[in-house]
Image (cartoon, rainbow, N blue to C red; front, top):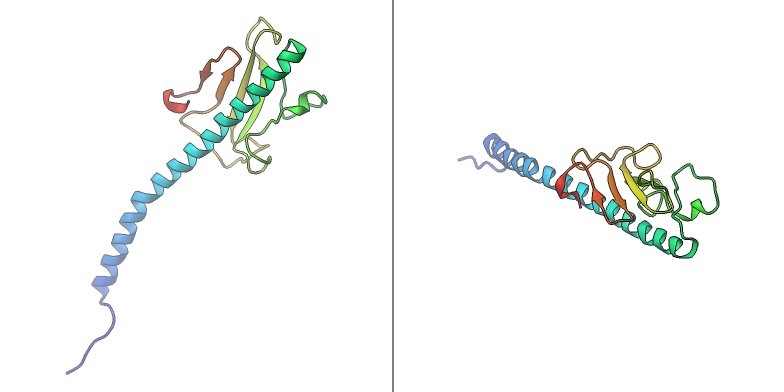
Length: 146
């Protein structure tokens, strides 16, 4: 009598199917969690920069616009990226006047996902650009982004 040791082809195929099924369920959940964490990074950066703008306003009675291309020394005190460094950031942040009333009365901060200056591979197709203004208005392309 001959004793077989090892796995049959059917057992291997069943094991591979189970692994494939688990991966099919787990990968989208993981990707969604990564997007949510990066979105939280963008929101936190906007809140931090708005607090910094309010401190600036309390001293100078005006807000200060800025962007990644700002060359002015005062504008460079505001971080234009959302993370700890340019390369690791998911959002590029800029500030401009809210409307025709001017920068003295209202400022709007915008966090744009995945530009050429930050992690260009990151995309947020659901929320897009996150905005926050000094009046407390928050907006994005979808409802559940803030």
